[in-house]
Image 1 (cartoon, helix red, strand yellow):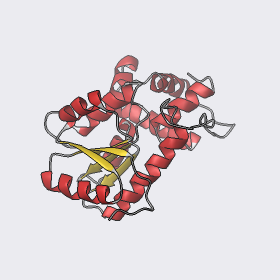
Image 2 (tube, rainbow, N blue to C red):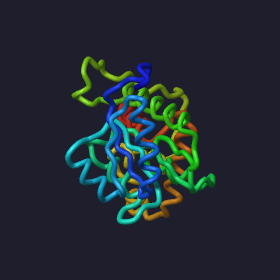
Image 3 (cartoon, rainbow, N blue to C red):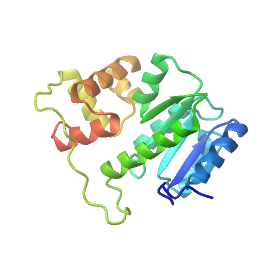
Length: 216
């Protein structure tokens, strides 16, 4: 019997090369009222995404064929799906792993093992956030998203301004690093600094703010 307190009909794409975890998480999320599609790695996930864009992606980081970082960079570069929230599940729990995951484009980073209830809470929170921010045209009855709110006294350095312009164009950190001839870690640091200055939560919000405030 499904929990009627959870919004149903949301479709989630779950990607992991561990079949036991796939079964566990899929069963738990379906019990809570979600439709769950699965894939064993990023390459297989691309085939799924070519046919159907989900409401959210839950993805392992370290996988064969195509890892989570590469998949998220692909998703963030595609205008048809760059609004989709992404939750990383990873056994790598160091601070630099979390920073890399978030700077790559994930919205949430959870470390294995995790509590199923926390996973559900993060999924629900991410879906609510996406419903407020997305401009997805097929969302029924949706009003235009409100403008991103950022303190009026935010000042970007010349380099940060260049970086945020590339972010607004949908470029991944690796590509921005190549454009500016610096290391990817330097770009990740600039993105992290801008998120701190603006109080925004992720690259998607940063891109929207850059466009709406004519920074891009």
